[in-house]
Image 1 (cartoon, rainbow over the protein chains, first blue to last red):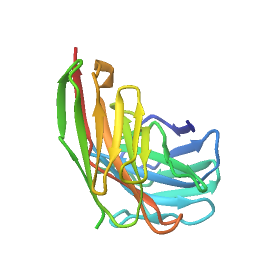
Image 2: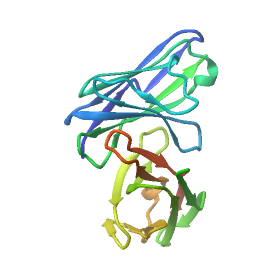
Image 3: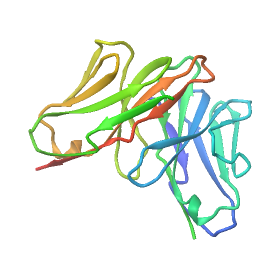
Image 4: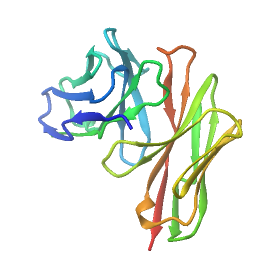
Length: 115
Length: 113
């Protein structure tokens, strides 16, 4: 199957700082990327959908100024959590889908802890 | 509103004890139903995609089936390494841009040796 690499796998940051998470499709061109958030023992909640070269579409309740998404190339999308607070601590997962593709392939996830 | 539910929330099986997981959905514009396996601290791993009622797919000890309102993931003679959370997701939307995945809450499966 297609490979999606997410980096870093774990990050600890101080409250008020910003953190950038990268999501790369290694062996296909990802025209669409999705960013999810997952709390312990809960399912994935879609945060935003981005198409290469376009602004991301955010789900209701997700602050676009806090969660900055960039999808500047067909193989890379980034999620920047700005001015992070402890309540932003969570597991963030990206997935990527090729143009015309039906399946979305997931990254390994990033465990963010804000202290 | 598009909704996906899964049952049971958690399931404990003895090794070799077959069972089924359920995924029920209420969506408009279904563009596929997906099953994923997720291990703790990892991203979901793709298992199956089903598109139409009556469709079935198999992979090792797993078999997924689909009706118009639900999907089942049958696990035959499970092994401890099958322990994981199994997520069901539906792909909805009218256009390639607008399509996204709606996930169910998952079923946490534990297979005891």
